[in-house]
Amino acid sequence: MTFNEGIRTDPNRIKTSRGGTGAAVGGIGGLIALLIYMFTGVDLSGVLGGASTGTDTAGADLSHCVSAEAANQYVECRMVATAESLDVLWEEALPAQAGIEYVMPGFQIFEGSVNTACGQATSAVGPFYCPADQSVYLDVSFFNTLETQLGAENAPLAQEYIVAHEWGHHIQNQLGYMSQVDLQDTGPTSGAVRLELQADCLAGMWVRHASSTVDPETGVTFLEPPTRAQLEDALGAAAAVGDDRIQMKTQGRAIPETFSHGTSEQRMRWFATGYEGGDVRSCDTFSISGSDL
Image (cartoon, rainbow, N blue to C red; front, top):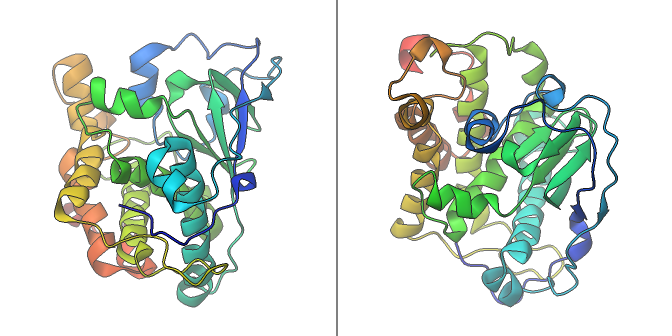
């Protein structure tokens, strides 16, 4: 999706950091850790190093991220503009549709590794949400991995979908779903799968409304309506991280009883459900039967 000329963005919305030395990620590294833990909304203390001993230093300079031109040209600026669009949408939608006041999550772009309230993570973990500090963490190098190792297009709406999915975990945290799910339980109808599919749906909801969400500072809508090709980019990213596709890549076969995120078909379908339904109620994956999931 393309940001509209005339919007103004605040580079201070996002923190940036470069990781120092410290606890490693529990012996799990590289592509396997990325495939297993990407997009997770769970407490990461069980898979990350425990007490972090590293020191994060200042990261990339985002002072140029103040306009649509920058957001359409630079990935880091696209993250700033996407975050602001998500903030405005949920600031309106969450009270209106769920009767809950929106709490703005933290958002940090990191390089290499990062210290969080859930432990220390490296870039191998992929994008994640830490409920303990209500923050989204992302190393933008993941977008290259999305294309080179997972087979999806490294396109703007695919990138924005990833951010919107992590924001979906924050919304779930506010709605109380995350505390209700037994994340040790896996399988095609497990709470973990329902949590991930709901986050996909909430991301689709954002895409639905992004072109009518107005920058309160300028009165200009943040984004142009998505084209069919752009929607296919987002759907391709959702499909690339399905449990069945990931397991086929890493193990040569899919094992449904170990699913924790949903199949490629489910992830695309629930993204489409959010896009077509456009509200929180349409994304209730917890009240439907397993056969309809």
